[in-house]
Length: 393
Ligand code: ADP
Image (cartoon, rainbow, N blue to C red; front, side, top):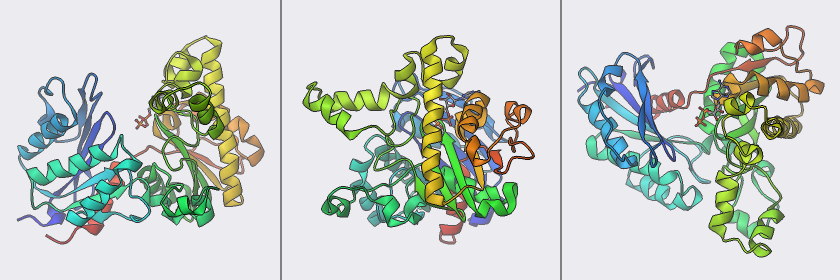
């Protein structure tokens, strides 16, 4: 049997309507192939695969794919691949609760603990656990490792984790968990090569994708973040409202007579860029529109990042570098420029041409706080964790 060093590591990242996968050579952590299925539940389609093994994924996805069918389709193709011997698998698991502060090798006891966390992330956790079970049934002896979106933030001081609610509720786990932890882990891993000594200092990372959050990093560790008990808190997002007055939620229920499910639909799916513009949740469509509501939605998005960045700076006691990542952060020069303008008082100043070109370093040479654009990668930190946690084969 292949040792883990000669084998491939399979990484699965099951979201609410997607399953992404990646295969890495365990010896070098070179990606062999990556791809994903999107639109599960509406119009599922394979978004394509890149890398040397991409040919494996030609062919048709089953019609009316649900998560189980999509995962089965992916695993079936990987199983039929010549020259790929899996040594271990790693999974993105959204919620690790208060106890999982690091990646963990999965066994029955771990699965029981993760099942108990489903109520904390009902739209995501069941898909993550189903992917683990699907891999288990395809390769019963394959070591599997769970990596948590929440784990990275367990280094936050207690005051950054608790809400000002009765302490018995805090003791029951109603705390700020924070999310996007795998994305922040990746930035913390690669930033020393990009920013040198500053990577260890006071850094704000803005993960701006469909979901959006900020993380304050000190010495590569999370000291504050904007998402909270759920991924609804903090920044304005594509369809989510971010932080709002809890009294507004009570008003919708008590005075307007809305059912909780209706309120949830408004706050999770009909707010954010989509709700404010009334047009789209996609920054590209809003930039292309001349509707004043589209401009207002983009302005509010940037304003909310600026306001929350101020809060992250207060938690850090200063700012030495700022990093943009994920779809909007990597590709929207307009949003980055609006955020930089709002933060000009901190010493941030962009170079217009570098910003337009999505360069790695987009700040002006004489700016006192450098600003970077770093591509998001949630799969590579999982592969790294698998390599360091798996028992030797
Ligand atoms: P996810 O959180 O699902 O991983 P992404 O990180 O891929 O999402 O980010 C998706 C978002 O990126 C979309 O909402 C879209 O608005 C934005 N985006 C993608 N490409 C561009 C672009 N060229 N310009 C501006 N925004 C973009």
